[in-house]
Length: 101
Ligand SMILES: [Zn+2]
Image 1 (cartoon, helix red, strand yellow):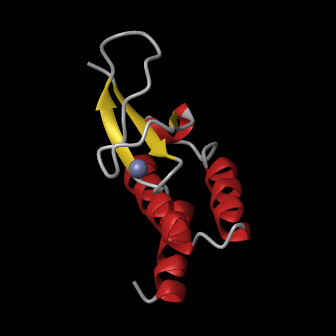
Image 2 (image 1 turned 60 degrees about the vertical axis):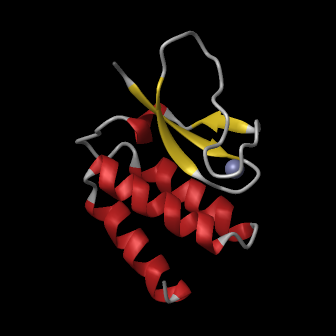
Image 3 (image 1 turned 135 degrees about the vertical axis):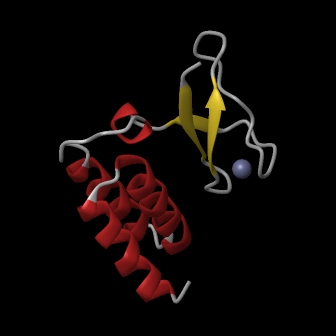
């Protein structure tokens, strides 16, 4: 079964779901919200090459632009874990430093 990553647009929760049916969006396990969206597959799959990095960086920057430090950190952590990407790990580490988390 393929695992997909989703993000809740209400509370920023990032969660994995085994998708059985087609394109149905799961509810958020954190807040029960329905405003979830699938994360880019480059992040959801185990990417060995560096192609995921620009997307990760862009996304982290988008979060930071909105002042969403917690979400940015959580996303970077997740991305680093899933891509085993050194750059993503560094981004995550830097965010942890900043947020003191
Ligand atoms: Zn939520």
